[in-house]
Picture 1 (cartoon, rainbow, N blue to C red):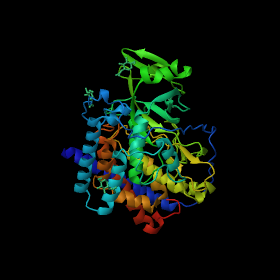
Picture 2 (cartoon, rainbow, N blue to C red; picture 1 turned 45 degrees about the vertical axis):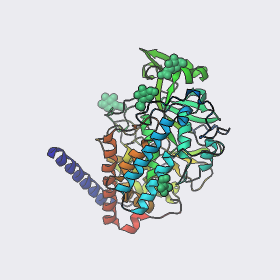
Picture 3 (tube, rainbow, N blue to C red; picture 1 turned 180 degrees about the horizontal axis):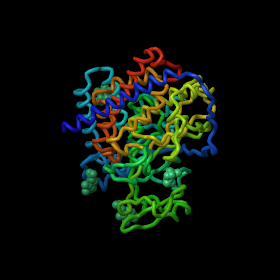
Picture 4 (cartoon, rainbow, N blue to C red; picture 1 turned 120 degrees about the horizontal axis):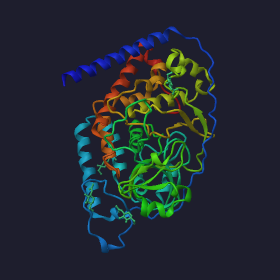
Length: 476
Ligand SMILES: *[C@@H]1O[C@H](CO)[C@@H](O)[C@H](O)[C@H]1NC(C)=O
Ligand SMILES: *[C@@H]1O[C@H](CO)[C@@H](O)[C@H](O)[C@H]1NC(C)=O
Ligand SMILES: *[C@@H]1O[C@H](CO)[C@@H](O)[C@H](O)[C@H]1NC(C)=O
Ligand SMILES: *[C@@H]1O[C@H](CO)[C@@H](O)[C@H](O)[C@H]1NC(C)=O
């Protein structure tokens, strides 16, 4: 134990020395060179589907006959709309909500923070009646700076619909290097489905971007974004699908032909660069766990697709310029893209989120077409929560190289210290259909990483002065 504490203080010291040295060296150089931030080769196709009408979530009981309550130990036992009418499910959900509100009252003294946390919790836990379709509600939420509002009372109902609504069509995922399926849910909503590849407690070693996507990371990132006030991550939820009865009957041939059986388990490998029969994802028997992500609405196409200036080379023998050039932020800032507008501050926000979740794979800046103030939409957060004991400080390069942060982000981070961030994240994830979404070690990791971020900001402030580090812009 003592050894461990010593090791932790040693690594914190090392981090501090590293950052301080970095900032010193940085301040010594100030000339600016040109760098090309050209467009990547391909544009992302956009054929988002949505619309249609779902029954209200709290539909009246019609078939009272088979009403034997299902046995529930936690809220993960939900696989169909039937659960909504199940007294066992409803009362467990309400009891969990009451318990969490109680906990919040105990752990938050500051009334403003408690109000904020309660708001997030209420929106997640409650299954309110939605007039019309939850898909239409979610489509109406999207703005240039957020995919959902700060308070979204229908979120619980939307997540429930995503986790349980009937699959009407299934196809291969749209593109990329990771196995996905694209599903159409009853009512015409398109979602993407990322299968589970790892057990919850699997620790991913290797390069900072090693391994397959973590479906649970996608879900945790969505809720963490809400907590940080960075609502730039598409809505995501866990879901268990019976591949045999729910997916195969509605699958397109090109998806269907990638299905196979390994032992007693139904598997599929889909279509993607490295997708092979050997890399197939498998269910337990015929039931596969995964993450369902809501597609953005058709009228919000993502057109502007740029390389992230701090992207990695993905080659151990090659270093990127940002890894060696102490003056890299000035190079980025000299580009017209980043000189004005919200993009640079969005990338700083993204680096904060990515450091907390352990995602070193942010290589794209995805933005809405035709919006000057478009946020950098944070798609693809699956390379996250791989190793709770590893804090990949280089993810924060945009922050410690530029020494700048939105004041609103900094304030939000500051009041979530002392274990609040991890506790709140754990609470919100407790309502997910695949809860527990993360192991305990990951909640401790986000709290520890939050401290490191604030330490870096402090060091920046001491070096450059508060006014130049914490900035207010029109976008937020
Ligand atoms: C879900 O319900 C079944 C019975 O309907 C029960 O056997 C199982 O243990 C429950 N699982 C959880 C996680 O509550
Ligand atoms: C959350 O719900 C509780 C219980 O219904 C209520 O007392 C509280 O005022 C709500 N808080 C917010 C911020 O919505
Ligand atoms: C999945 O669906 C198949 C085909 O309908 C059925 O035989 C099987 O029992 C289902 N599995 C579960 C766990 O419900
Ligand atoms: C990196 O360099 C080593 C030694 O030269 C070589 O064996 C390896 O294949 C290289 N790796 C890549 C990804 O280029």
